[in-house]
Each structure stands twice: as C-alpha cells, then as structure tokens.
Image (cartoon, rainbow, N blue to C red):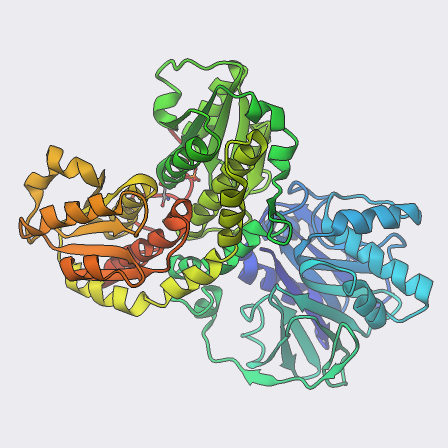
Length: 614
Ligand code: AGP
C-alpha cells in the first residue's frame, strides 16, 4: 500500500506535504515524490527512489513554492522501485499530475487503447495509464477535470485512491477512491487530503471519510464538493477525529502486529486480486504462466526459506505433492547453502521471503542458480534483492509488514503457494477438475472466514490471561496443520519469550509425552479433516496424563470440545486451506500472552524484521 497526501490553502504546501509523507512512511517507502503548482502556474514534480528523506535531499535546491500540491510515498506493486516509476506522474502534455494508491487491474487493456491514440508512456506503472486516460477523456470530450476523472474511473477495474492537479486550474484539487482509503481534513481556508488521518490530525480534527466511487473537489473558499463517479451529488458527512497520532499510525490498534493480524481479510483479498477468477473457476499466476514448462518438466521442487517463511514452505510441500505430484524438499536456507546439496538443472527452487533480503535465502538462491536450477520467489517487497535475482516469482502484495512477528505475510505466502500448487496440478492434469473448482471457490471465501475467526479475539485474550504463567508450551498438529503448529510455537517464542515447541501430533509418544504436566499447556490444531480421528486420540493421550489442552477445532465440533480444556472454533473449509484459518487463533494467542507479559510486541528483544546477516 502507498501513502498519499494533498494540500490546498493559505500556506506553502511543500512543508505540509513532506511532513505528511513522513507520517505515512510506515505504509511504504520504495520511493517518494511531490507535485506543486507555484505562483507562476508552473507544475513542478520532484521524486526520488527510497525514503522521504531522499526526496527532501533532492528537492532541497528546487523551486518548492506554491499553495497547492500532492505527494506520494510508494509501496511498489507495478514496476520496480525507481525514479521513473515513482509518483507523481505527468500526463502526456505535462498539464496534469497524479498520485495513486491501489491497483488498476485492467491497466494493460487501457494502455493498449491509449497507445493506439498515440499516447506514450515513460513508466511501467498502472498509475501513468490512469492519468493519460483522464487527459485523453478531458481533451476528446471537452470536459473539465472533475468530469474527466468521473468518466475515466467508470472504465477502471481495481482499487484506487487518487489525487490529481491541473496546472491550468491551480485553484482546484481533485481526488477519488475505491477500495483504498482517503480522508479529507477541513481547516480554516485550507483543505488536507491523505490516505489516513495521521498527516491531518495536527491541523484539524474535522474530517470527511471519502466513500467508494466518490470524487471530491476541493477549492479554497468553497464547501467540499462530493459526487459519485456517475456525477450523483453526495452530502459530505463531517466527523471529529478522536484518535492520537501514534494510535492513528497503527490504525487505532495498540500494536502494528495486532493491526496486521486484523488486516488479513483485506490483505488476502489483495493478494488474490487479479489472480483468482471465480467466475471462470480459474487461477492465473503470471509467473507460472510464463514458465509453465519449467514446472511441468521439474523432477523435483526445492523450497528454501527461513523462519515463518519456511513454515509456509512446509505447507506448500503438502499441497504441491498432493495436487501436482512433484517431489518436494523443504530446506532451511542456512543449512541448504552449506551442506553441499545435490542440485540439478531440471530442479525448480522456490525461495520464500517476506523481506526479500534474508541473507541465508539469498545465498541459497545463488548456489542453486550456479547449478542451473530455475528460481521462483514468493516475496512481499517489489524489487527486493531476492526477486531481483530470481528467474520469476509472485509478489504477495500485503503492504509493509511492520511487526517483527510475521502474520499477514505468512497467510499470503500460503495463499500464493497454494495457488501455485493448484496451477501446476491443473496444467499437469494431476488434480481432479471438480476438486480444483471446489478449492478455487472456497479460496475466495477465506477472507470472510478469517473475519469470523477474528471475532474470537476476546475469548483468546481471556485464555492468554490464564496461560501467561507458563514457562513452556507444546503445539501439535498433523498433515497441513503440522506446519501450523510449528508457526504457532514460533509466534509465541519470538514475542512472549516463552519456550514453545511444535511437533507432529503423532510424535508425542516418541518422547515429548514425557513432558506432559499441568504446568505445560498443549495447543492442538485439530480441524475436522485429514487424520482428525488420530488427533483426537492424541488429545485423549494428553488428557490421560493430566495435560491441559487448548484445541483449535472446526465450528460445531462437540467431540473435541468435550475432551479439551479450552477450544477455539474456526469455520470448516477445504483441508489444504485450513492453515489459513487455524493459524489466526495462534497468532492472537501469542500476541495476547506477550501483551499480558508486558513484552515489546512489535520489536521483540534480539530480533530484526529482516535478517540480512548470516
Ligand atoms: C517470523 O515471525 C520471523 N520474523 C522470522 O522467522 C522471519 O520469518 C524470517 O526471518 C524470514 O524472514 P523473510 O521471510 O523476510 O525471509
């Protein structure tokens, strides 16, 4: 996600815009830019790769005059993070300037049409297509900017929050949104615009939250004008801001981690957008489509990753072997890079990394490349080192993950890997068509089902108060949920500093059952699928030895609810998709226990968000 800021009013715009970008930098910092109309009516755009401070350094000796402007801090989705792709973007005539947060799904079709009309493009972004479309509409239909924005957005499929300037009308700032947030701040003879209220709160507490498919026109001395993209006039609803600045950066949550846990319904929707087409019962992953033969001819798939990303890889092993019937090995990158592994030219190596900068995973990729393997990466940061050295890949598009403990990136990784397994299986004919269709249709239901699990948050925080005393935990699961047990244990370890181990449930009798006691809670991931009956037996073995069990169960499961001490319910779903639901209670349990213990949830001791050293 990106951050956008706008200003029109009595003051110099530039300082307000830059300060606003700093407030929004947590939303993304691949590049930053500003567009200003100065007193001479010149439209100046300055932009720089990297953080906002880079932009400030670049603009230090430039003309940053003017009382109207827009600014943008980018989280790249289309096009590498560089100056050319940085926002704002000029229109062809350089009369207009636009900034955008979102994804225009049909940008390729729109771009082809504009090229036929003679338009040229400097960047790889979908945003530049939009500003060209708006200019084309304005010129060819002889309409004002607001009308051109309305007409252009009627053709757009996707999500957007935009702000646009026309240097021939320096008294007007136009903005619009659909699917990405946009807030207007109302000051004395001045208006503010931003992705959220953090850049606004220090100037005014009077705000208007723009709704989907609304276009807002701001002119000093006039009331806020809001219409729909179909030009239906709307009455602005002015609200008073009640949150502090620090709370606002976290979206009102006490920690980034909790915000990111609760973002997962939206972030999974974002990561499936333009890829899962439920109307056509199909999945389209461009990285797979462009490299089909490599996957179809692969004798083996090697997955290399670290930490939570390694857990996602373990889940992928179950899915790929079940649906694509290709042997999979899941390797810790730090071991793989040094153990002199056998790697063949027809191997496919899948590298998974949220940050795209993990040193061990980067080194593992380099080793595999030297041996001629095909590298496919699953990453959350466009243009990071790992995607840059990979042959192809799939971005997870969940926006910056600030909390050190990975949550929304994990569920997006599992989603991307499941989609990949399904695509390979479909192409190879190793998955039954009906099963494929059933899973695809269930996949798009997952965000709403996660929403239901998040509704258990209060109960889970109550459990946290009961169990925060524990010095040790064991997490158990089988099949697709064995890696979920590992992930749950890691979450607890890294933010609450309580020792926790994840195990295949059946492994209990090979040693760990000797540890069972009242003092060591056992979390069992027991959805009603796969080897459910065997997991129930494992729970009974624990109870027979006076263990205390917290079980994650399928809604309506009365059997385990009778045996376990505490249960957390998740909706039923396809077995291969259960990790997307069963991990949510484990994320929340770890979070709440850490909070009860007074730990630094977002920045746990000794850890870093990206381990760029060995
Ligand atoms: C997970 O919560 C941790 N932050 C850590 O295990 C992390 O998953 C690991 O360092 C890998 O990071 P990456 O996905 O950015 O490569």
